[in-house]
Amino acid sequence: MRLRRQHNTIALILAAVVATLGAACAPAAPVPTATVAASPMPAATPTLQPPEGAYARILTSDGRTVYVRLEVADTAQERSVGLSKRSSLPADSGMVFLYQADHQGAFWMKDTWIPLSIAFIASDGRIVEIQDMEANTENVHIPKQSYRNALEVNRGFFENNGVKAGDRVELQLGGR
Image (cartoon, rainbow, N blue to C red; front, side, top):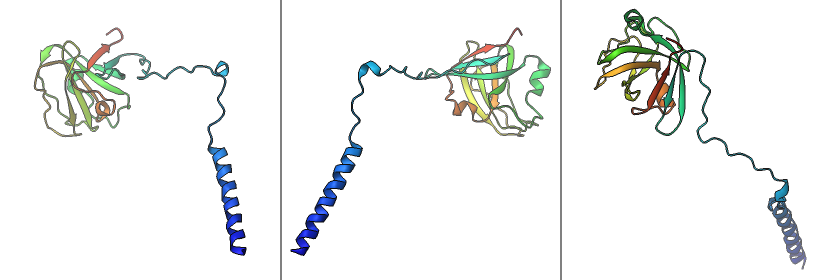
């Protein structure tokens, strides 16, 4: 008899615990629709504002926009120096190399201490090829087809931002 009372007591305690937990986990009472304000859906592809000065606007194949602050190398002297002898480059920045005509000139990293990625850009703004470059090496980097401009950024920037060959680059050079 005593065992049966203990069993009944335990069953009553368990039933009370289950009822309490069930009430705590039950869905909240419905909120009247008149008091619920519709919240706007977040943008599927948030776009940052363009930076001041010269910049590249990259339109990715998946609909995103990526901005890069630019230093411009449009003379033979500026192109030959490029980003050499620098110890850092801001994360959102790069250098664009501008040419007057399509060509297949080579790039290398001699005396360039920052590992970089380079996008070779056709005259219509399409990225024809992206290559990663090791710091302070003399390996030559030449795309398989001719290009009009080239954009160097910190190594991994393109990959981390979903930028690929075929994406479009619009250059805003701020009066240059």
